[in-house]
Image 1 (tube, rainbow, N blue to C red):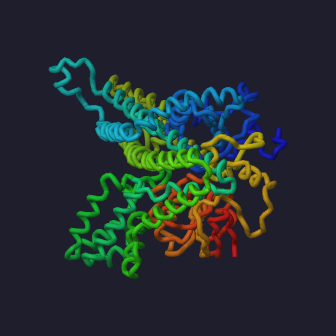
Image 2: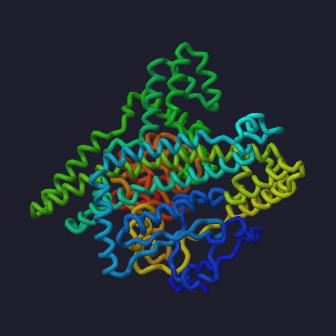
Image 3: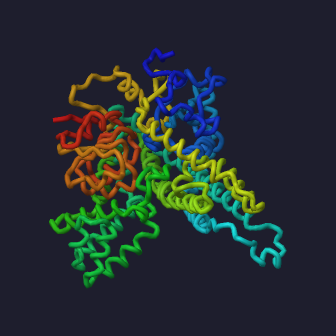
Length: 606
């Protein structure tokens, strides 16, 4: 039955024609079910277009499932974030939908707040040393991941197995290495969320204080109070700027501005006197800074810079053009720092008591201390670690290809991680008994069918939300990260503030007003179409798109909140941005002239 508030019930959504039976690609607990209908149907579910805009591949569920436990247990069982009880996940036609659980009882919120203050307070008081230890843990986890290899099973077990008396064999090693691969992934997921909620929590506390003290203050004004921090996330882009400057200084810029592929440009560089010097610098910059996913880091199909050099080469070309035109390509960090100090100073003067000024100073200081982790952890986790992880899975795919289980190494992502255990054991049975494994006659056909189903699902238009629209959105991370607010829901239902036919309303992500030609980019494959001074219009940006921001005039995104990547990077680059519009990529076409008002959150087609 359709929801009276306007969103369809998840139980009324049917599979698109040709994708019937899609459910068998996923674990049972990921699906809406009749036995849980009384709990699931009255809830509000929104599509996670930020991290998983496409249908989730069976293997890639390890990413979403890992945060389903890791993020939520830190929220609910470790830190006891007062108003939050975790975020549910369900798959509908392969698309990921989320539903926040919130604490309704004021007494329980107060009780949890006491525990949160004690627990979070310890981390805040020891932040620097715990953050340093976190970096060591993350780098060790990455190092152990890189050491995992999947050699083929030998024709004969080596003599060393006998002389060492080890008692286990190559088949045991293969299964245990795969187990270690999965364990390593889950371990990093725990590190991912160890401190993240606290980073958001500190900022949310500052935001709440400011809204109480200054009722008319905008969210982005508070965000600008913590801007201008030299976070790790900008280091890859800084490396590209250095490479562009080196190309101009050494006289090798011309081949880098060519229209050939990255390999063709590198080949042309070798013909230049100083080409080898530039190539050496380019290769040195890649470790670790090119372990940078072209997507959010949760989907195997979004390759890293190391695997797809088009983005860094496009950015280097853009920086060279700016340098040759006499422009300064440095990120305006000093301007941002001056602006943040001006804002803090002016608002501080409005406070009436010393206690309020002390509290304000402490909250601003804490937010600036913990904010770098909010962005920096992404490089270690979603980009450096997850890129290597997916490449290790591809190596496992090579093993299956060698034994006829799969036709292509990429086919491994059509198996759920638990199914890979079965496939590996099937392979080992054949190796151990000299009896043909069933896999070569089973998996190629099964993968072909799954590819067909996912292809159909990719053409399905996922509704922005399902279930019952809440009166108010109160869960803090849903608002700040995903940009889902009560106004968002009203806009989806067509009952929000009336805007003109040529207007779109979203979040005021980064201040300023700009007019320019729209460039609608839906996938990373289209990024090289961006031209200087375009206005980027996209579903959502990925961190590795940062260098593109040096080329554009402004940004508009379908999704995201005040702490989404598009908003943060736009502020750091001094570009106007409107995020969380919902439908910009549907309503705006490439070539149309638009106005982006990052002060009011309005986008206008001119």
